[in-house]
Image (cartoon, rainbow, N blue to C red):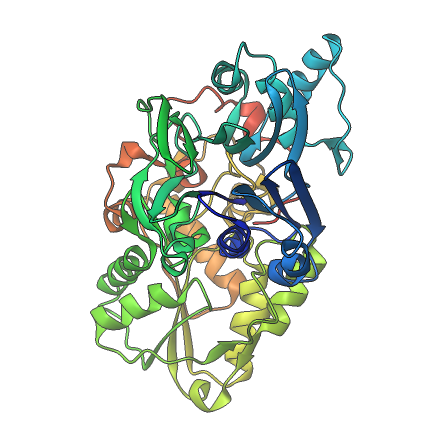
Length: 484
């Protein structure tokens, strides 16, 4: 995923923009960018793969002036994009994933549209979005036509002389919220950007909704509604604990997930409850509250030197971070039966090689792993989240059990089936842990507190009602390098 933030103020906005954007650093590791509109547009983009956003942009911010601005922590490509369009110049940042990029690019090329931004040999998707919008009769019409054209998802902020146009993905996969303080209005992907910048949440945008914010307030440009399929993984892993989506807090959901995990563990005895830092911590706190067992920290994350091991594009970098960021405390590990709460198991390689190994090396008596979501079965359709289908631990298990790849995995997604139990047992042996139990879809949905039909559960079930994407060719897409 990427994180996007925008602010329109009655005075200079750059300090708020800098810190508001920085509060999205958990969503991307590749590029950071800001654009400000004062007398003219000022734009800066930096590679942040080896440094923090604040350190890269602190000096730039001293020279950027204006009362309106947008920022991004980008998962994959350089943003913001500047376009001198038929509707006047604008800058744009996006969050999402476009699956029919090649088709749309070819269509625009045939119309004489050129592209100048390239990310890893492909067209920059944010530039593609900008040029699709430019095909409309006006900015609002352009955004609506862009929504109609793309397969995938896109939420965006567009900085224009009128103000900041904010548009949430038509199916609501990614969130946007509006905040207000005495001298400014802001829009954010993560509401955790608001409290320390003195904003109060006033509105969560609906799917497909388009608004304009400026220093005077909010102007509705297109009502939202219809299908809402916000990504459930936001609460389980991706989101920051202090953030709210649809008015539901991330930390509270994770605690509830942990409680559900503990409720299914009446048949095991443990001495210590732990969570893989950072995103597994709240799940473990919930487990400890429900079970009555002490929460302790056998593994401590060394911060702020290391970010998320899940997000960088290269496996080598992911493994290095996974190895170096967690420091074991042998005095807590030795001789104990330990429950390890984790947000999810994607490949399982980092969990096995760099987390569980440290437990066994520390002479743990037993290691019980409890992921807070079901086995991941499908790579994400709508954002740079889970990667190729071949990498997923559950698919490797199925391939081993069946002796081949199979298309219909419905028996393996049934929490009560024998095939599901065989798959989990295969993964348990592969991880080399005492026991392994996943969260059920039903318990995860109940922990979030939204109706099942209002959540995207595609990664676990392969179902995405209301979307036209879910075809076999999409399930078999090649790996896309990703950062968060």
